[in-house]
Image (cartoon, rainbow, N blue to C red; front, top):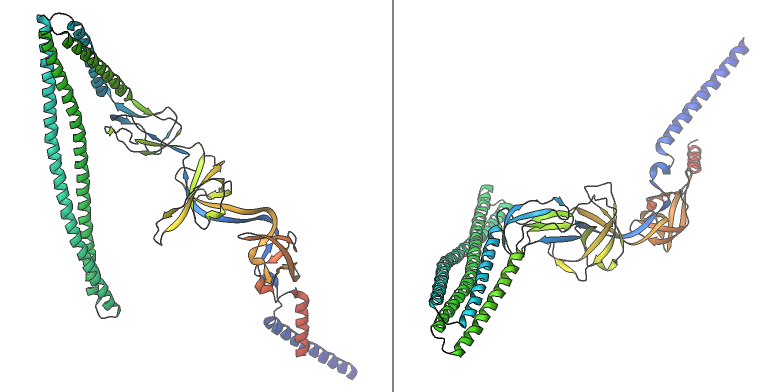
Length: 530
């Protein structure tokens, strides 16, 4: 019994020792794991999988979609618009009517002039025949009637000139008044500018005192309000001056138009006076046909007069042909601008409507003087727009401006070179006026083995990457090829699907087998403690 009790006690002691040993090992293990965690690359680093991709160098810029051609719709002579049938943004087909005109009265006036001129020709030819016949009562009455008609025409021309002179006098008064108003407003502007300058100086002094707490905010705020009020008065004076300048420009234009009308009236008067002189001379010749030379000269003059009227008819017919009932689209396109309204008078040669022709999709942009030397015709570009975030459009450079231009910017002048791109397969998704972001590829290597540039680790002339196979983190020297903006071509040293560290500087001191190294660390720790 004693032997059994003794054996039991020994067994209990052994169990207690084992329990104490296990507890000590558990405590030691917990202490180690909490203080000496093994290094794990999976959690310590981020990785990139080596693959084939494009390596590129590019120039970035922004631009806009432009039409392939802009057609400016105009008329060859001034005429009144009846109705504008399109508005900005409307698509049109070739032959669609854009504008109709009210030209019936204008045509009637010219046709009336042509009819009168033809009557004058007929009359002139009758006069030619009459020159060789003795003058009779009816002939004399005819000459008298011609004199009366010519005198009437001269009188009408005089009245027209007098009326134009009165209108010109009124317009000159308006010009003088506008000039005086401009001078007055300029004086006011100068005074207000001085007031603004004084208020600005006062505000700056108040701010300096306010910044050092030598002036209360209320006083400083009053100086700011005074500056704002002075600036508003200056702006108002400038606006009034601008209105006066507009009035001056309108009055000067009226003067010019009146001068042109007066010149035309003077020509009419001159023609009427000539006709009157001719009629009087014809009457004198009819009363005295004894001289054969006089008749001969008159005959020749009459022939010349008929020729002049024939030339005048030709000009009238040309003028008549210039009038048109409507303007039509000469090509398919989009209306980008309408510069005329219903009832307005369309001036000769003025752009009434701008029609953008979109036979092909073009983009225009500007590159800096530093990037321009890198570009050449035919270079590829990727073009995107914020309105179509999932679409990338392909284009090529089709035009590089021969010279640079200087653009004014808030940060200072910038020298840029305009560049044009022709896009392909846009499926009409890009509209004229869209803003676009453009990436121009100056150099590229397509579908080559490459890695991101930041994954390379340089030691002297040697480039390496850190490859992790799931157990071991190893430095692998590589041979590099073409350097792109983001990626670098790899000639050899790694293979597709290799996982490499993206932050190589942190991996330089962590190469090796983390698992076996971790076991060595555990062994050293236990040996030190036990």
